[in-house]
Length: 414
Image 1 (tube, rainbow, N blue to C red):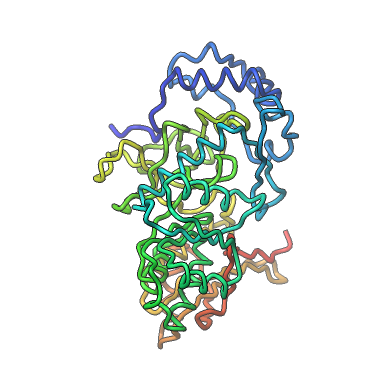
Image 2 (cartoon, rainbow, N blue to C red):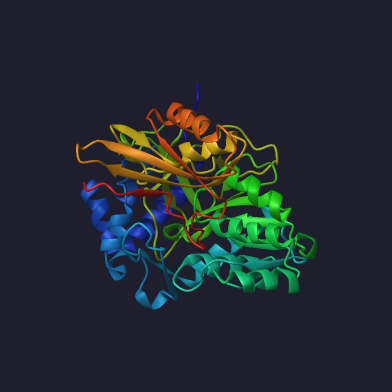
């Protein structure tokens, strides 16, 4: 019988984190009281299902002083989400939280083969966004040389790649693709020492991976994380590239059906729901990430003791309904990866005509070979279940971003 999708959890660890949370956080204490759950009643991992869910909206709307589970004097830093889907979500950190985060991130670098001999170019955002601070702390923890270029400024990025001899590039997939295209166009690859790419902050497909790897001549690793869960560094692929290892000694993952909130079997796509085990300032209790993934049921061939989730297939909150059919960007990704002549970049425009009829136009960067538009439209219809208009555009036409790329533009007046 196939087991439910959940990572291992020790009842003592769960009870201990709930006791800290209950004692320190007025907001989470009230949630637990309302649910009729006291930390002392947690006897086994089966009791996890008794705990209430927490959402991003709740963290956004709750003053950090009411959510934090430690005295405010113990908070040494704050970070926030990028705010791409709404208001920023502010999270707090103790000194131990930051140390734990650096340890997790160092583990990520080690799984990607990065060590003290590497030079790590960190081309992600600094400041309130968690990415820059996390990537740099992990790099320094493994003893690598950090090159903190930050996001944007492609000319400076290319200059530093060459002059610093950077061996590792850390970036979003969209920004890594932009740099890869410039390297290819200018014939810079022989001047680079790059070997590894650590790519995160947004879901990216196999087509983007192939383009980045081929143009830069590197091996890429998909890294996982979210602001509420420290930030990036909560998991990464190993050299097998068969799922993302997640650090079950720091947090617990359940995979639930996003509609029924019931457990799904291992191997079945659902929403990742996270409970932290060590986080002090902003603990998470059954936090709904909206990330769609699945749990592997078997050990990884690499021998790692840490469980694996699948690379993200999307988010439960970025799916839209068109004529009653659910549409996800991952559906387009899958088709593009299978069809020669298509690039990895696309954008879906959703409109509604005067008669109230919805339509999808998918703009795709492509070489424009004969018959490609018709073949792509046919495959997209088969994958999505809707007729899709296809607009082929020149490579480099669609916007690239150093942060998260908006794939769906819903122009309907709802």
